[in-house]
Image 1 (spheres, rainbow, N blue to C red):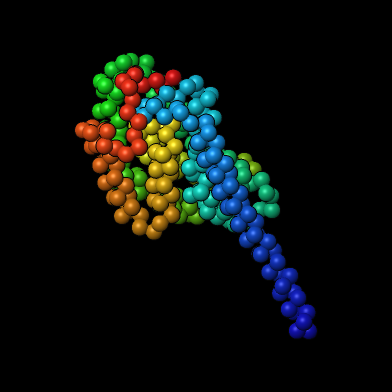
Image 2: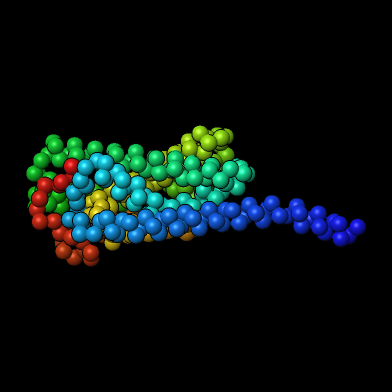
Amino acid sequence: MASTVGHDGDAGLAPAYAAVRARIGLVAALFALAALGWVWSVSAMRGMDAGPWSGLGSLSWFLGLWVVMMAAMMFPSVAPTIALYTRATRSTSPLSPWLFAGGYLVTWAAAGVVAYVIGAGAVAVAGDRLAWDRAGQEVAGATLLVAAAYELTPLKNVCLRKCRSPLGSILSSWRGGYRGALSMGMRNGAWCVGCCWALMASLFALGVMSVTWMAFVAGIIAVEKTLPWRRGLTYATATLLVGLGILLLVAPGAVPGLTIPSGETMPMS
């Protein structure tokens, strides 16, 4: 009898172990995709860093690069959320978590389109007044100062809290099926955009085609989302952005790793 009970207990634990292994495999796959995204981004962006307001090429080219960049920068920090979603759904379909991840990227793709349109519109309206040796330097510095201010706002705090503790948001916005997985991923992506849009604006101001600054911003995002000292980290980020913004305004040559533009108009399109 004891032997039978033991075997039954082991059989009952087997599905739980299998689910844990599946979630570990999912997280590992997301990290592997992020690594591939970094490799591809380094290759695609080689020699393209023209400093603040680097040229973005056509919309289709930029959007493709942007989505790969977002996968590289965001998948490591969002992987625990996707694993949590997989655990909450208890779905046997291997497609649902990938639809969740796809919805997350769809939201970031939409944010990339908005950024591109804003940049192209600024060039169309202001023309060469946005050249680095005219207003470009001031605009770049001001962008960093605005990003620093946003770090200290209640909206940043709310969005960061949703990103760091996503279970409540997942359960409150629950949608079943494949369409539900996609829409919940998009919702989670929206919270992430709300949390990180100012840091992404800082990336444009420092050089969106710079792998160095891409890694810098990705590191800040990962630290803010994963380490426990939420408000202390946002204060530290704000201080760092203020320092970079002031340097951009008064002594851009002192910013390490910054490519100083040669004075062209912001070539966003």
